[in-house]
Length: 222
Image (cartoon, rainbow, N blue to C red; front, side, top):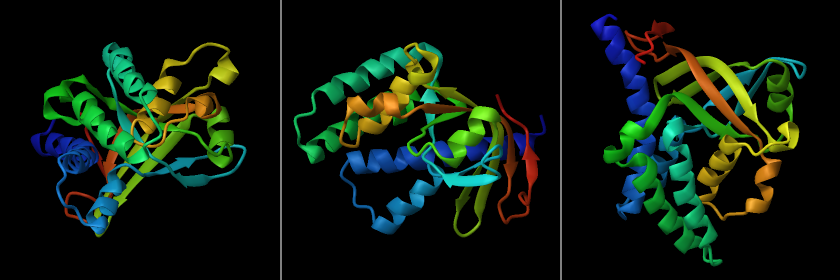
């Protein structure tokens, strides 16, 4: 592995994960952040998902987050469920407590060793073009862009976890729905309606408008 290539590849994961982590921890600690800075940080969480299939070539903005390694998945899910099941109707209090749970379970540097940087997860809430395509063709690409120049292209394949389709309890579907509801108003009754996507990373390209970018393929560091 060339030294510069390895650094650049790791830079993607530092940007994609740490940008989100730093925002969550800052909000949890009550630090002041401008709305512009908060919204800009969403760029590391909301790539365009590119798919192709029966619905045609399609791009859709979706929230994708890194997941725990499989050996930690149930442990983190239990922490999420304890928090979600304590919801008392106070949305603001739920969100404040949820930030603490996310810091403790996902984003604090002490638990970064539990994160699986080979895959990211999302929910399918619309069941339209992306859903139709990915059910037939799992090949997909994520395009990340943060103005004015940061951009990464992540290629891979998507696994769908849908209890309604498989007829069995799907752990990833539970987990990714729970990860959403840790901060947002929880509603476990809708979890079976929202299948989960697990995007397995296969290739990474630096598409940034920089000397090192413009479509440079990066060596996957894992």
